[in-house]
Length: 147
Image 1 (cartoon, rainbow, N blue to C red):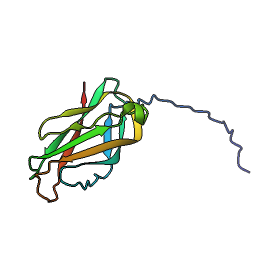
Image 2 (tube, rainbow, N blue to C red):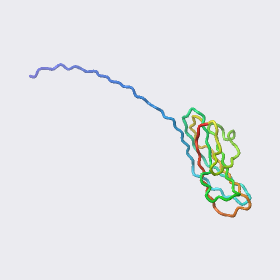
Image 3 (cartoon, one colour):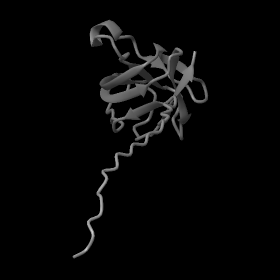
Image 4 (cartoon, one colour):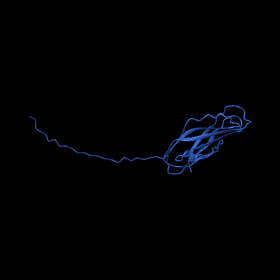
């Protein structure tokens, strides 16, 4: 017969500290760009949507500019307006502001700590009667910058 060995239950615990660092982040997501069909001498409006996510405590703004006007002729004015996060669509409705190549226009001010989707982005194209019929594309860049 084998000698019996004493069985001792061992209770061991261990612990350590987990450090979590939340980095500042800001993200702007745009839905597909709309197509505006407009007659000479008229103005057309189209809507799409955007989302903005930011954990910044400091106030930021969303600015827009035409990055590449391509062969956009004189006589076409492209404007944009954005619904501000945290406000009703009616409260944040503003007239579209004309965009220009290389010049930033502020569309949303005082943006901080936002997590909003389905916000309205409105484009307007105003066409002078002298503009020849043709299709034009304009690249618009949006920037979130600290105020």
